Length: 182
Image (cartoon, rainbow, N blue to C red; front, side, top):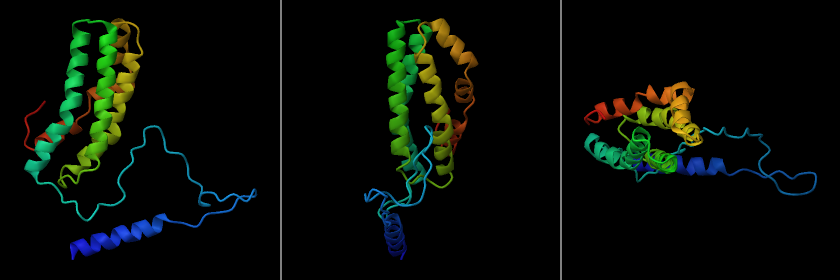
C-alpha cells in the first residue's frame, strides 16, 4: 500500500510539473506565465519527492554513511588547518581550502539525496542550509587573502567564520547517531 501511495504521489508531482507554455508577443513559446524569483546564491535545492524505492536508513546505516560522506571534507579541513598552523606556503592553504569547499558541496549533494532517520534529517538539512553555507563563504574569504595575517584577520572578524565556529548541527548529528564527538 505504501509503495502504491508513493508511486501515486510521484505521478501527481510529475503531472503538476508539466504546464502549458505561453506565447510571447514575438510568437515564441516561452516558459510558464508564472513569474519566479531567481534563487539566491545560498539556496539549497531539496528533493521534491521521495522515490518509492528509497527506504529510510537505520541508525547504524546512517552512522556508517555519515562517516563515509564527511571524511573527504574533514580531511581537507584538517589539511588546511595544518597548512595554516605550520604556515606552509599560502598556495598550499588555498588548494586545501578549495578541496574543502569541493568536499562540502559533494557532501551536501549526496546527503540531501538520502532518507535519513527522522531524528537526524532536520539536523542534516540545517547543516547543509546554514552551517555549510557559512563555512563555504568563510573559506572563500580566507583563501582570497595574500598572507596568513589576512587569513587570521578574516577568521576573527568575518561573520560567516564566526557562524561556522559556533555551528552545532554536526555535533548533534554525531550524538544522535551514537558517534564520538569530533
